Amino acid sequence: MKKGFVLVLLAVLFSAFAVFGAAEGEGIVVQSSCSIVQSGEYYLVYCYAQVHNNSDQVICLEQGRFDLQNGEQLLSTNRITQLWPHFINPGEDGYVFDIVSFEPNEDGVVVPQVTGINYQIDYMTVDPAYGNFELEVNASIEQEREDSKLTIICEVSNPTDMDAYDPAVTFGLYTAEGRLVYADGMTLQSVGIPAGGKTLVRFDVDEVFVAQWKSYNAMPAEVRVSATFRRDED
Image (tube, rainbow, N blue to C red; front, side, top):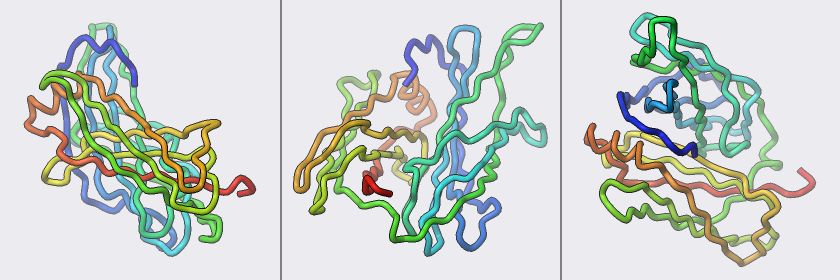
């Protein structure tokens, strides 16, 4: 998470309950949202989307892009850098999250007015035999003060009889109404959770986002976390 955001000028939170190019063997973008913050002279648009695998195959990202729009105006076209987790099992959810930077023009800084995100994602399918192994997660949202950062504490347990190396932990924050407002994740490189063991994973969410959510009465009330690993030979 980038630090040092000095000002929140605009927050845009929206849900897009729509299917973008969904077909058999592919995923569905269930909903998306974004937050806009200022960092120095730049404006950063944090974009999130929840992806559901409605097929009977394991899917992974082949390529994808998303358009930021202001009504009918196209603001930018951007490449999707990663799907979290990298592989999504049938019936499971994952997330894409990217950051788009807007530079000041010759007239000065212009705040991007974002009214929608259009995702177009191509997936590759993988035989279910090579899918993820699920880990168990107990997660909580913690906050020291009303205006401080949020901390997501995840207790990840390995219920399998295999050691879980390089596990991926991914989460989405949702309002009480089920609206996605934030997503993040990481792969625990060079980390192994022994069979029957557990570990703690912590994510920090900057207070700049908390200030946004409070001003729009959209504070997260629920965290949905997934943790997975794959066999070394996969």
